Image: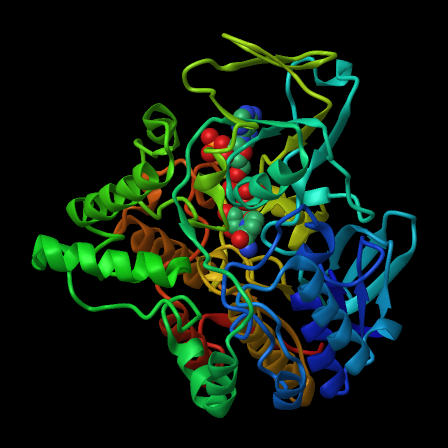
Amino acid sequence: SLDAVIIGAGISGMYMLHRLRGLGLKARVYEAGSDIGGTWFWNRYPGARVDIESQEYSYSFSEELEREWKWSERYAAQPEILRYLNHVADRFDLRPDIQFNTRIASAHFDETKGRWALATDDGETLDAKFCIAATGCLSVPNEPNFKGQETFKGATYHTGRWPHEGVDLTGKRVAVIGTGSSAIQSIPQIAKQAAQVYVFQRTPNYSVPAHNGPISPIVAEAWLANRDENRQLQRMSSAGFLFSNHREELATQVGDNERRQVFEERWAQGGFSVQAAFADLAVDPVANGMAADFAASKIREIVKDPAVADRLTPKDYPFGTKRLCVDTGYYEVFNQPNVELIDLREAPLDTITATGVKTAEGDYAVDVIVFAIGFDAMTGALSRIDIQGRGGAALTDAWSEGPKSYLGLMVAGFPNLFTVTGPGSPSVLSNMIVSIEQHVDWLADLMGFMTLNGLATIEPTADSQNAWVDHVNEAANHTLYPVANSWYLGANVPGKPRVFMPYIGGVGAYRTLCDAVAANGYMGFKLRPAA
Ligand code: NAP
C-alpha cells in the first residue's frame, strides 16, 4: 500500500516523488496531463518563457544536475524548460511512479484508518497515509464566459491550454483578450505572424523589458563558481532570487536625478530589478507613485502614438501590486501598423459574434480569438477536487471565506494533507522553484520524522492556524498590494472571496520561521501516535 499520493507532476510533484523515494517511502504521482511539467506542460503559447533568470529558475537539490545542464538564454523559453524537466524526470527515473492522464476527483480522510481514500476520475480508488497537493498555483485556467462566444465560427485558444502542435497564425486576423503576463509575452510573437492583431485591454499592466538573449558565459560561470553561496542567498532572500538585488535606500529620500538614474539602470538591467530599486516602493504611496511615473515615462518614450501610450499606462492601482510583467517588445508592438489596442474601459466588450468581437463602439472581424484571461489562482485546483477532512468537512466550506492554513502548508481539520506552495506561503510572490524546494524539503523531512517515530497523523491546531491567517493578512496590509484588484486577492474570479492569499513576509524570513517550527517539535501542530 502507498505511503503517499502526490497530486500533480509539475516541478513540485516531481521533486516530492524524488525526496520521498529517498526516504524509502512508497509514493505515487497522479497527473491529469499526458506528461510531466505542470505549468510548462500546459502553457505553450508563443513567447512563453520564464521571467526569472534561467539559472535561478532551476532545481538546486542536485549539484550534478545543476552542473550538467546548460541554459541557452537569459530567460529560457517554454520548450527549453520543458526539455529540462524531462531531463530531470529521466535522470531520476521518475516516470515509473507517475500515472498520467489521471485526474484525482476526490480525497476523503478516513478517521478510523487515519488514511486518505482517493478516487480518480475514471473510478480507480487508492489510499495512502499522506496526501500531497502539488497542484500548482496557476493551473486552472479561467474559462471564457462571454456573451455569444458559442456562435463564433473561427478558432479559439486559451493561453493556458495552448495546443501542443502549435498554431499557425500566418495571415490571420487575431483578437487577444487580456493584457496580463501571458498576453504581454504572446502578443509580440503573434503580431509577427498575424495580418492583424486586436488587443482587448480591460486593465493595463506594468511591464519591464526582459532584455533577453543568449546567456552570457560569464554570468553562467560566475553562478556555478559560487553555486552554494548563491543558492543560500536565494533561499534567504526576500523573493527567492538574487538578480533583483534590493536596495535599502528610500525613493523619497534621494534626489530626483539620483532616483531617475537608479530607475534607468534597473530598466536597462531588466526584469524584476525595477521593483527592488528602493525599499519603500511597495509600502509608501508617494514612493510608489515615483516608480509609476517612471514607468509611464518609459511607455511614452517607446509608444509613438501618445493616445495609445496613455491607454497603456496603468492609472488605478500602485506600481507592482499586480504581478509585474517582463516582456520582449511589448510596448514596441503597438508601433506596428498591424496591431491595434482596444480599451474596454472606454468601450466595454459587448458580445462575441459569429465573425468576431463587438464592443460598445466597434465590430472587429477576426479569424482567431486568443483568451489570455488568466487563472483561478492559488485555490482553483484544490477547490475542484472533492476534499473532505475530519467529520466529512469539505475544504471548500473551510475556505468559503478565503483560504485558511497554517504556514500555507496544512489546514486545520485535514490531517496529513499537505499543500505545496499553498495559500498563506510566499509562493507566487517568489521564485516558485525556490519556494517549491523549501516546502518539499520541509514536508519530506516531516514525513520522514513521522515514519521514524511511529506517528500516525499531523494537523495544525485551530489556534495556530488563526494566528497565521491574521499574520498573513497583517503582513499584506502593511503594503499597497491589497489596493489592486489582482488575482492575488481572487479579484479576477467573480464571487471569489477577496482575501490576499500569498504570504508577503519574504522567502528568507518565512524559511527561518518554518525551520524554527520544525526544530521546536512542530510547534503549532498536533502529532498523534498510531492507535
Ligand atoms: P492575468 O494576469 O490574470 O491576466 C488576465 C488578463 O485578462 C487581465 O488583463 C484581465 O483583465 C483580462 N481579463 C480577464 N477576464 C476578462 C474579461 N472577462 N474581459 C476582458 N478582459 C479580461 O493572467 P495571465 O496573463 O495568464 O498571468 C497570470 C500569472 O501567471 C501572472 O501574473 C504570472 O504570475 C504567471 N505568468 C508568468 C509568466 C512569466 O513571465 N513567466 C507568463 C505568464 C503568466 P483585468 O486585469 O481587468 O482583470
